[in-house]
Amino acid sequence: SQQGEEDPQALSIQEGENATMNCSYKTSINNLQWYRQNSGRGLVHLILIRSNEREKHSGRLRVTLDTSKKSSSLLITASRAADTASYFCATDPGAGTASKLTFGTGTRLQVTL
Amino acid sequence: KAGVTQTPRYLIKTRGQQVTLSCSPISGHRSVSWYQQTPGQGLQFLFEYFSETQRNKGNFPGRFSGRQFSNSRSEMNVSTLELGDSALYLCASSFGTSVPSDTQYFGPGTRLTVL
Image (cartoon, rainbow over all chains, first blue to last red; front, side, top):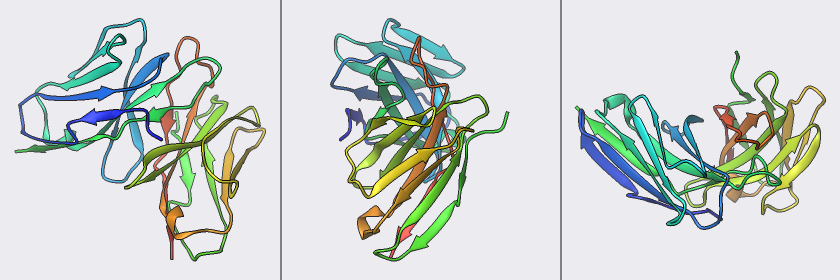
């Protein structure tokens, strides 16, 4: 079963706009990770945020984490056509249950020229 | 540094057959995890191997099994294939420690089609 839901399920924006996707999860976590997947291919790791962090940046990516609400958001600024992909959040429960990611349902992002 | 490799990339089998998929992790990584991705169920955790031992297991029937070799390479086997086993099978490697946090790196996947 999946840990949580992602919202929206699909998002269509124009190049240059910002894209925001949200992830909710159900149980306590050690960290939360975001991945990108291009059309049926492997997952590419984007960013990891630990449970004691509230915000993290990496290039055009900004991730926030609110453990009290069990939610996270991924913001992609100044989007490009190459950002078109599915984005997944994944939670890691941490020590003792290492390397068992539980994935959300994913957001399909379409960036048009 | 070479990434995670999976072989074969595509596979077509018929119901009742068995299949073996292979995964070579990033050099230095000792943990290999397997995931199944289907349109209906999304990404689901199958199992994880660390230092040749199964450390975690998801909710899949016993037809799904795996093993890990001393060089950390892993194989996954599915016996008595069913139509519902058609999926993209992804493996991921990591150092295998969650302190402080452990990033998993995914391979390109094996697309299995069961006819």
